[in-house]
Amino acid sequence: MSHASRLHLFQAYGIELEYMIVDKTTLSVKPISDELLKHELGAYGSDYENGLVTWSNELVAHVIELKSTKPEINFSALENAFADNVKKINSILQQWDAMLMPSAAHPLMDPLSETKLWSHDSNEVYALYDKIFNCKGHGWSNLQSTHLNLPFYDDEEFAKLHAAVRLILPLLPALCASSPILDGKFSGKNDMRLEYYKTNQAKIPSITGRVIPEAVFSKRAYAHEIYDKIKSDVAVYDLKNILDPVWVNSRGAIPRFDRGSIEIRVMDVQECPAADLSIIALVIDLIKAIVNEEFAPLDEQMKIETETLVAVFNETLMHGQLALIDDKNYLAILNLSKPTSVGDVWKKVLQKLISINPALSQWKKPGVDIILEQGTLADRIIQSLDGHYSEENIKNVYRKLSGCLDQNKMFIL
Image 1 (cartoon, rainbow, N blue to C red):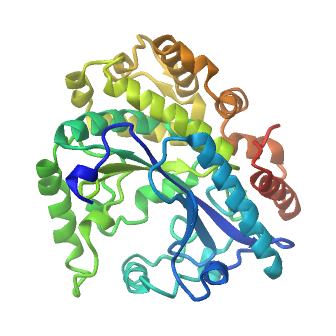
Image 2: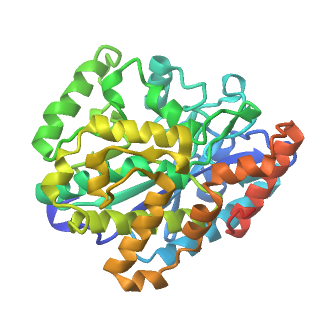
């Protein structure tokens, strides 16, 4: 991408949603994403462009990614396009008695026996990853996420955006958690996808870091402090120089200086595009307000230590919306003066955003209202199971979720 063609802050956004392909009857994973793509392409391939939305393969063959074909600003049109593509895929999958299922982890999959890696183009990269990390496990072959790509034009815009993104990452699991059930039982945490995300590349710690990115605010500093370290550490395992440190970097927010964007990766995929787009719209409005220094000056944002943010992030993973924030510096950044639960932080943030821009009170946010009133999708899944973790009960709940996805409707208690 030439520098002239790059976008400025908040001009448009790239969005990616991942879904698992499962048997309609048994809900077992069906590793047929290659056959699905072949159905439209006429031959095996990794990308099928269908208007506003492109279908793409992932590491494993039972996951399909739907992504905006190019950066978009009209979320209503994009939501409708995602919903239409879900319908189209489900129609095609009927010939294999299969369907798409949402949420960030399959509740019953045995990844050690059921994993099938993508075996077509780019499989050299996937094979090397598998050799280094063994990708047959939860957090590798059993995870689906939502990615949000935010543009920046130059170092000045990168500094503002990276500072804001770092601040909001610890709060996101309290909106997005959707992976509470693994191996047919409650895992103990609402966001087990991120628990695995923290550790699944521990063999090379520099790849993921602390998930919350370091306080680095220029391209030169990022290359020196992060990419050079990853390149050096990976070289021991990558003798053919296959892995690019830019692509290997797995922090919760990843800068792509080549195309001018930061990709947020800590969001579990929701039950339908309407839910994801509602969350994304709120997250963007909050980031925009922080960048515009509506909450705190940029220099104060930059001073927040990574360790502080990691502590809040880990608390949110453990306790969700009930997690308590008591760090005075972080509270001050959010315009709060006393310990506050993350759920209440989001409610207060929403009030603040509406006070900044009254038009937001008309903003399409029914999805966010449901999440703040009834809990994350993980909370709603747990409440629906009501302590009964039989295979039959789990399947009943996840069939309902699949229906929500097909109809683009929220999962409401």
